[in-house]
Amino acid sequence: MERPPLSEPRKTAPHPAAGRPTCLDGPVERARVLLDAALGEWTARGLGPGLRHQLSGGKGLRPALSIWWGGRLGVPAAVAERWGLAVELLHNAFLIHDDIEDGDRYRRGRPTLWVEFGIPVALNVADHLLAEAYRTIAAIPAPPEAIVGLVRDFSETHRRTVEGQALDLDHRGNATFDLDDYERIIRSKTGRYLALTWVGPARVAGWSQDQLELLWCLGDELGPAFQIRDDVLDLTAGKGRGGEIGCDIREGKPSILVAHALSRAEHPPADRDRLLAILARERDETTEEETRWAIDLFEAGGSIAFALSEARRRAETGRTLLRKLPGLSEPVLAEFESIATFLIDRKA
Image (cartoon, rainbow, N blue to C red; front, side, top):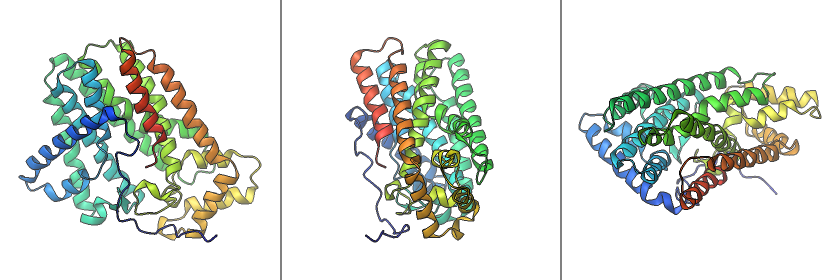
C-alpha cells in the first residue's frame, strides 16, 4: 500500500476536547474567558494581532488544571485563575521560541506565529507574554510571603525550562546521546513545568515544603510521560503541525526514540550512522524518504514500543504518588487520576 505524503496540509486541528475529563470542561471554558479578557486589554495597546494568533486555538489545559486544582483545595478563584493564566503565558512564550529555534512552520493546525507575522514580531510577542506572566503573579491576592514563594517557584521553573532547551539544542545530532541524557532534558523542560500548575494553588492553600515536593515529584513522572507521548505523536499527523509527520526527525531533536535507537546494539553501524546523518541535516534538506526510513527504524527496533511502555510506567508511578498527596478525598483523587490518564493517552 502506498503511504501518504508526510507534508500533506491539514486545515483544522484535532478537537481539543477529545478524551478530556468532564471535570476540566468548566475550567477550560473559564480559562478561555480569562484569555479573551487579557487579549482585549492588550489589543487596546496595539499588541493584539500577534497575541491573538498565538493565544487562540490552544487547549487551555494549563490554566484549566490550575483552576480545577484551586477549586478542589478551596483557594480563592482569583488565585487559581491568575496563577493558571501566568503559566499559560509562560507556556506560549516558550512555544514561540521553540518554533523559531526548530523552524516549525505549523502549530495547532495553522502557520506558526513567526511564519505568519515574521520573527521580529514573534519575539516581541514572546517578550510581552513573559512580562505579563510575572505581572499577573504580582497581582495574585495572597499574603506577601506567599507571593515571594510563587515568584520563586515560577522563576525557577522558567530557568530550568530554558536550561532544558539548551540541553535539547546541544544534543541534536550527538552520536553519544542516550537515555540518561534524554532524562535530564525532559526533567528540565517538562517535569516541573507541568507540576507548576498545581504548586501555586497548593502553596497559597498552606501546603508545607515537603508536601509541595510531592507535587514536584508528581510532575517529574507525569511531565516526562506527557513528553514521551508527544515524541510518539510526532510520528502521526495528529499533532497539529499542518499534517507533517516526523517534524522532530527533520529538526534533529533528541527524542526518546533517538536515544533508544542509538543504544540498540543490534542496529548495524551503518544504520546508526545514517540516522545521525539525517538528524544532523538541515530541516529543509531532510527528504520525505529519509524521514520515513527513520520512522521505520524506530518501529523495527522497538523504540516506539519502548517509548509507550516507558510512558505507561511513569504514569503508574505518578498514580502511586497521587495517593500520597495530603487530605484529598476519593472523588478528587479519582478526578486527578482521570486527568493523568488523559495527559498520557491523548491522541493530539
